[in-house]
Image (tube, rainbow, N blue to C red; front, side):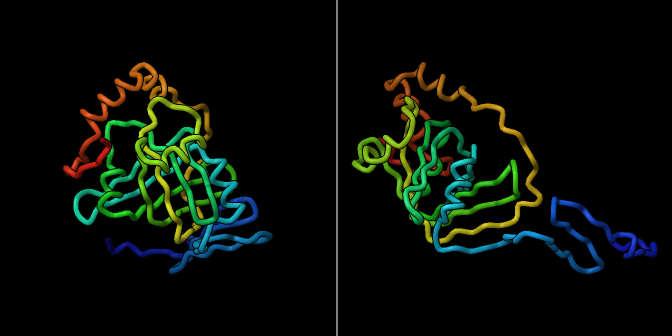
Length: 219
């Protein structure tokens, strides 16, 4: 909002170091400059490269976004050793039991999915995978094909397969540095205590419909 106070644009010019790169704020523009390495900002790719596959394998958390044609958009954080790159255009991940089952409900109505990874350590990077997904339950043959890729877990609920049709990287310069300490064992401990029968009873109580009332077909 204009206050009538004279404004000195020159006083805004400043530099901020990021190793060999710097960000400069000027009068009307924001400039990214590098001195000795390529700056990968906003690249679009047709498939997952080997370098990006290595980046994915090193991450401790990823985020999944889904939505139906109506109702609420869902974004879920996923942790543990639950993600696998099958090929340059196919990924699968293990969906563990939780208090909601939004992803399953949405995929039955619209197979669109976005998966996002962020670098919290080392070089900045945001990686998004876009594609069409299918959800497999224990009754499905595909579940049996994929479940062996992951550590055994009593709380295993579904395996989700996504055909990747677009890969996008972006800078991640505003993502904070955070150090990984350890995995949370709370969910695994709870699942083990419930046992298979207890888990299925929990599904019956909590996981048959989304918050918008969409069926999840967990049974």
